[in-house]
Image 1 (cartoon, rainbow, N blue to C red):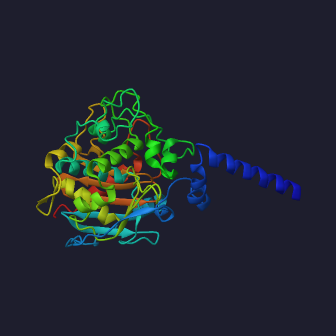
Image 2: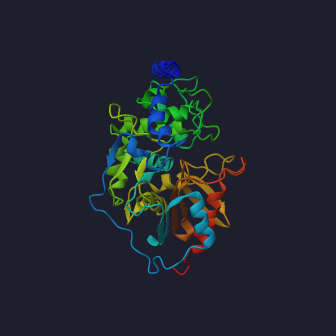
Image 3: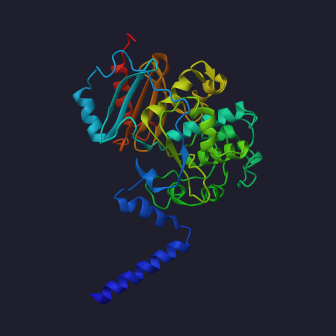
Length: 384
């Protein structure tokens, strides 16, 4: 028995050593930060296990007003059962810029932080709009190579910042969240994310079609940082987060303390009502309480499809025509949603541990999204 244990230990030691010197050394971090915690993928509170940049609360925090009928409505038994099944932690409905309903589960509350996952992509796109507005970037048509001359691939000199924001980059990428060997998984754990992104060439003609790739938003984040001379956290704070009156200190996960590069494609740890502020800004055409924070033309373009064959996506916003309503939304892994019905002046935020069944491959929206959209419309206090 002792001999067997020694052999097993030696084998494990060799395996760890091989991983350490291989291209898969990031798996050691994955094991310690995710898999040994009992999770098979990233999770809501995993920001505590990574390095982060601090995103402070606003210098002038603005609490959301409460609707005159605040929390007077009861959720249906079916919806409550669905929340339990999908492990919802926050469910917030904002009508006419006032909180109409908010419910929290699993020991979460209004101040609780949770991982945004790809909800962050919409924030990065907003920063692109701001960088254009501020003159750091000429337009959506400016070439990426102007800022990141190291990018590789036969079409590297053609890809534009607009191609990145609309997921039309032509970048090589494997968008597989649950495969430990995919580049998406590697991006979550490597300690030099910028170096990894530059190994993914632009090997297809950009600007032709929508193909969702997290690495594309990461590259966009690198462009914005290079153009502005600021890290994304600082630029987000000074241009949007602070002016929009965010109430709580939040975090943006980075690859490592040494490199300090934000995971632009994901991972702002904040709360439901502070996430909702960007939806309000876009609903109001780039104005926050009358002050212009984003150019209205950019906002309008962002929430319209770029590619006719892909009406579900604009410039880092998901789009849907649903039951006669125009909808734009932010979406993240495991079912993080900020869903906006602009004509109804209605915003729904749902955060949780899982989103349930995947649904059909033909439909870019999972079944749970329809459940939440139905709930928002049914709960909508039309009288105001």
